Image (cartoon, rainbow, N blue to C red; front, side):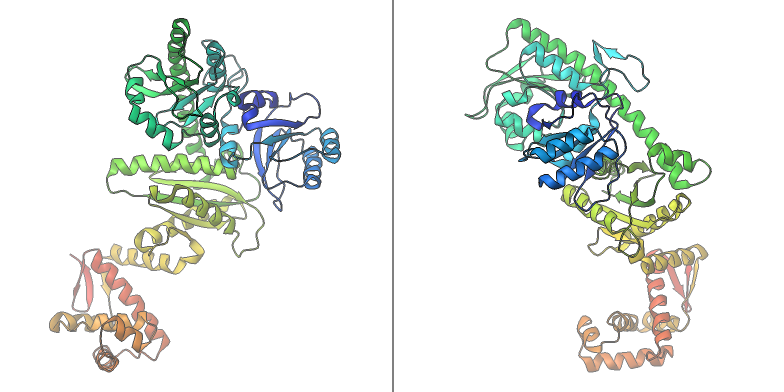
Amino acid sequence: MVSPRARLSRLLDDLGRMLLDLIASPGDLDGELTGVAIYGPGDELIVEPGELVLGVGLHDNDAIAELLRRLGEHRAVGLVVKHPVTADESVAAAVRDSGVALLGLNRAASWSHVAAMLRALPPATTDVTGGADLLAGAPAGDLFALANAVGALLDAPVTIEDRASRVLAFSGHQHCADQGRVETILGRQVPDRYTQLLERRGAFRELSKGTPVYVEPLAEDMMPRVAIVVRAGDEVLGSMWAVVKEPLSEARAAAFADSAKIVALHMLRARAGADVGRRLSADLVARVLEGGPGAPEAANRLGLTDGRLCVMATRVVTGDAADTEAAMQRLRDALALHFAAVHPRSAAALLGGTTYVVLPVGASGDRDGTASVVRLAVDFLARVGARTDAVIGVGRATTSLAEVTHSRREADRALRVLETGRRGRRIARYSDVQVESLLLRLADLVAEDGELHLGSLGALVDYDAEHDSGFVDTLSAYLDAFGNVAEAAAAMHLHPNSFRYRLRRVCEITGIDLTDADARLAATLQLRLFRVARDRGVVKENGSARSR
């Protein structure tokens, strides 16, 4: 959520003409921003009063004018559409009638990046408690206000970046810089080719000394930079960069260095606030997932009270416990950022090694209402690529808050199926893997009992153990091939006639009638459980399997 004390005029001041410009205004821009919503053609319009709406895929003036009027009924403060767009008389009239401002977004900007950036904007003048909370004259944690202040001191556009060269905040007048800075702001990340150049020139090594560093232009069409490290004690928090025309004067260099100390305080405050917010969100999500008397209040605070809900669970294992924990933290942050951008009313939390996302789902034509969740999961994994070996399980879409615990349980079970033997799958709905999940749960019962009675299959296991005949593999190949002898024989590298002979011997030893569908199903289940019992250290004894 954007702070309710942030205003549309502040938004334009902070993001500047490079990202957003005003196409048409209904008057003043003092409307309070309460949040950001994303709307595309054909979507259900769900907008709260005071929200700024990102109109994805809207280009036609008639469609824009119609949406403006609908947004006026919902008391939205503004609509953002991507350039090129020109307000004709119908659009201008819709802006006046609705009281909703129309803003234009740079066509090179990413919708998800812009949504995340908008939600990161802090209050204009006060903290969440409603009282003044200032550090060196700027609202605590407000890196945008601080970037503007430093930019004014240096008379230069400024960015504040983290240790990975990701943009945390930037000042106004970025359009006065060069194309490299434009790319950096639009992508919220310094492009790799520039960081590599800086690395080769030793700029980052010079930065570590703690004094302002003058960086010659990295390309012919670029301007020089002045940068300084932002440090709290021995910990490097990030850096601050200004696009300049020439080296700073001694007075401005000193002011720049002093500013870095103030930026460090604000970054620490922002990080602390994020940690507190993350813990609070995790507690609320846990209460929703567990159900009980506290769930309705927690859901209300998360904005999850209306409509159907669905739970998504994801996990990543790298082998080393510390690496796994770090990977899960990164995955949780990436999921929260992704879903905050594309699905504002979702809530994500890392609980016990699993990251859960609870999100509303609208009316859907698919059988269980989760197709949209799967699409979002596919999009997320496509974005993170091969950087993390994550798997995602999706539970049912609920009809009431009380069913969220069932959706969470199903998401966990789907996740376990993927982790046990996913065969290349990274995403699964429980409804698609219910049988595999039931088999795993049945195997759990066998392991818990410490005893598995194989019935007629036990005789075949004993025969193999005594004669090393491999008849269990013969039966498995036949059942896996659904009775196709040619396919099963090829899988075992046998002639079909040889395979038929072995199959007859299997029937003689076990007494199984493979023409009986129920017998085939029972044999398949017994084989699966036998393999699980063997893998878990349960050994065969006289036709049964018992724990060692």
